[in-house]
Length: 488
Ligand SMILES: [Zn+2]
Image (spheres, protein in one colour):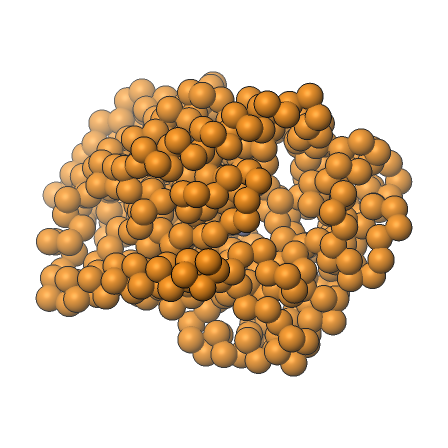
């Protein structure tokens, strides 16, 4: 069964990738991206727009942003400064708000295939066609893929996006998972020791991978070796860990931790070195206080050692009985074929059936509290979609939902927007060119039909997504993947 799944996944993904490559040979952006583009003038002025710049500062009303050849040339009060350049296309954006393009830090290019459920093992299906369009439609202009099940597909996709043959965010391609035994999904390589970890990092860095992720059953020795090797290549490594606790990983030198305290196992009593305890999340929910000395000490270690945390509240919320809200599910509905929709609803109902025994409502609240404490202590919090688990959270939709949940966690809307924009750029070392709206930066911006500082749900009202100065139409990107998520 495992073998068959692997074979089918590989065949269909190669078919899509080869089709994509050959179709792309002879054509240019004009013909290939045109169906999705709304604004393509070399000089564009966003006039009379409210600006939330991504730094966490208050919204600025009635502004003018001048975009020239893919870069932001000026951000000034409308009617002041250098004025409107000759020949510019002027967009009157009265009543609209613009935020930076999102820097998504957990943006897989795969998804839980139909046939998965809350009770069965996860098989990832590559979404080479749909995921990049959905991310872009939601305003994600830069994406770290945070664990790959088809690294060559992801690398080829990145090349096609960079050559303007395929619509999608600028990609930071993460290597195949650095996983131990047993692997969480059949696509993962099982490391055989520290030397194997070094070999894997070397090989895939040579192929073009630019970031790394360690996974739940990696041994401490393999993780230590991987961190040293990744850093020697000038790259960064994150982890969704279980066999290694947060404090231990921070002391080894890991750069980032996925999901937050909800997956930290170090507080589970009786846990042995290198062991992934089955009851860690339940124990965390029932017994670990977020203001207790061991948690405060762990947060202190992460901050001291400059370890970032990636918030993935949307996917965690999907495990909370009765969530995500049906209003959110219905927004995603059109993107899924009927089999996927029915599988997702079945799994969501099964979780709801067992609501009385669920520790997730408590754990989700603790995770939110942890994220606030981590930021208050000076930690770098970023966010990402993670379109996995049982499939309730789709690429892009989850990034928007994260913003709403960060506000529910207690961050202000402008703080939440900083978490999903500038903070990711800082982690990537790209804050000079992306992550906020400022003169000289890449013109990566999202025009919203309402002000998210007043009502965070306005992040769902994406009207135009500028990536490198080209304005994409979200509804056209969405329409092009209608009924296809989970298939390709
Ligand atoms: Zn992940």
